[in-house]
Length: 482
Image (tube, rainbow, N blue to C red; front, side):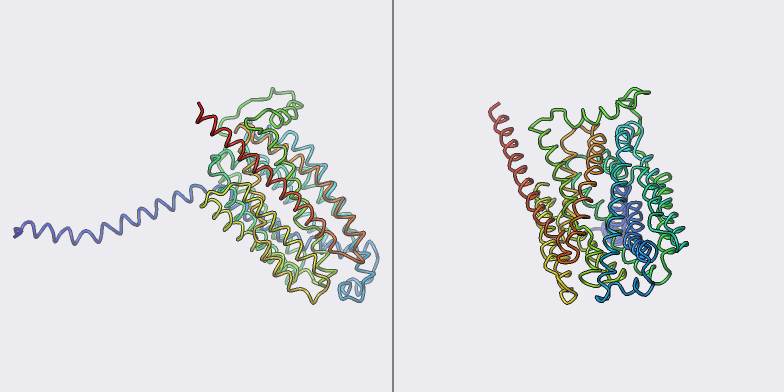
């Protein structure tokens, strides 16, 4: 029999235990939340930046098409408004060829100008930090939006005025320098083991802003016009600048002077040394081939899709924005699920990239089968079947950044950005002239070419995986022998 004192202690314990347990659970949940939030760095800024970009991309093309039609080609307002109704094919064809060629020259500027910046940006960011290049590029985007607003307010100006906006954003290095800084920052704060998953989640948050912005842009354009679209975008880009300057902590804590001052040409040599130095296990060969695959991915991810949708499906800016936004959103959700499953089951990054390439190949095949407005439902199938496309980029970047030394990652990504910027000339040239040549009889030609290129990339990644497994087995056998 327990004593009265023992019974009193038991009662006190029973009374106290329900209170202690919730406190422990709350503290554990709070600790887990703080841990998760401690990993949030660039994601909010990237999400907002992508909303701004998605907000402008379709409406920017729409403004260009309007100026080409009314001002450059001098068609009437009535003909321009009705060019997509199926009864004004001559007007539509002339306008699309002109606007497509204008975009081609924009692409040339977007290739040439960032080259001059990226040659030095990688080495400088390795020494002095990642925040400066991010801030400068975001400032270029703000100026870009201002120029589009001014052009929209002057309806008699020809489309060529918008070259000024192209120069403004690309003189800062544009997406080439920005992506280099972002992924270098992520490489600084992650380990090789967690980098793929971390890049996948960051990409998901980043590019999820795109579909939201695309849908928002279509609504803003329909309700308030072009000026409202670019005013909102400019405001969002300015917010991103404030976030980077005030909130983001620099990942390069102490500058390391690896290149002598006063010798800027050495920055260029640093890029070459980092890329072509010998790495273990055929690392140099794998690095160069993975870079080639990364360039090839540019050629398979959709070109002149808005023009194709207007020509073949008869869609306007709002209809295309809704589908494009939905397509992007589903691809990002598919990427998150696929990268998460691959991480859980310890699948290699080669496997993740391969499935993504298969997915984008099937996406192109389905869209190539659409020949008229009555087949619009195939875009739904294409959207679903291409859901893994978003996993290609983080998998390839993880593979590329896993090969070099950590101190060389910024240089490697700068060199890759340099190649991507120059490669954009090939990309734009190929698909601009293909679409212009086949616009009358087979406007889906780009989807067919993209499918064949995707098949080649699948074969290359598969062979790289086999060689990687072979090298790993040789290492294991060597260790067991020793």
